Figure: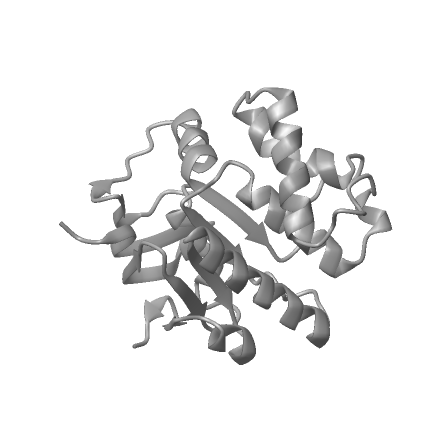
Length: 225
């Protein structure tokens, strides 16, 4: 049995653009071992975001298989995909994707509400997570009242809400200045160690990639090395 918690096996993704097919990924093989911190590095358009979407059940491959805990991930419906994501995967996006009318605490509680967790239990965990990411005094602030770095900290806390095995972060420092970028990647590395998370960070940034235990490079939709 493989020790890979998540695996792409000969994965490809092709979109139909009018009359023309557009192949974004072709023959990608990638293993994420349990508790590993991996950087997925490549230029814009190399297929990084698409691969994260496939690994996290946001989309299905055109060819090949996604394998989770040694079993093919065959999500037959949107409901199946939502259950898989809710139970096993946390996402962190470049654009934060916080709901503007909810404060930080309410945003972090959202994944637990989707899973119909008790409200009091969800709020208690959200408070713990916001404190863990350094926002104990900012819980009642709306996203517009937070800096970019603070918004990303909220997004990281939200990704951890349902105690996922895997965190998929897509250019999590792309909208941040250099100093804040360093803080966010250090926070992700710290949480990875403390929670034994399997962490995959897609980035074009050499500094962010250097924080990982292993680097996988994508070029033109293929693993380059």
